[in-house]
Length: 284
Image (cartoon, rainbow, N blue to C red; front, side, top):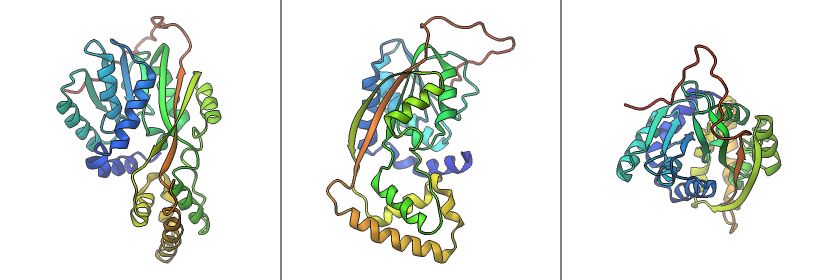
């Protein structure tokens, strides 16, 4: 994962990200299904503008704590603004890599959330980090698009193949229930359940979709094309996706809310290794 490219990408998107109503509903549904209870300590990985963090903070109440982490400073600035407007005081944000969490103590959290972030995270690395910071018996919860969706992105990858680019579906690792179950099992989690849903994305025109895909940090290979090849690729994509957008379900997004648990009983901790003293970082 190119952290600088990813950070720059989300810095550019930050201003309008939290205002998309489907993002809010998506985050709130993930938290609702998690069954959080008062007093829990929750990590929101790849928090973005903090939509899931705010929903979690309301669920765990004043006796609980929510920490949101993200690599994008602009996203965290927007998260801080939304948090201040909400009046919640049990949320803090930390600029950190959600797939490393080096500044966080082992077994520090009851729950790790990740809403929509799996599209941009290497699953195996992320799950290993989340397993480490969860207490025994702790819950990991993430949302994921189904593999092959959104359909406009699938068309983009198909068109790219015509120009010799093998673009990987970023949901290949966790985009089905079977692949998610296998991925969390490899990280040491025990599967609990997967809840399917369909989100109706807001309509977009073909030109906007093209610009979004070209800028997507998952598709860096596109930059290897010449100007002439890129122009031909764009023309082909616009023609194909324009036909797709006339279909009634063009913007339907099948998703899954996935829940798995770290084995063990809450409250049991392994002895700390000498010199190991990581804590939950707090913002000033």
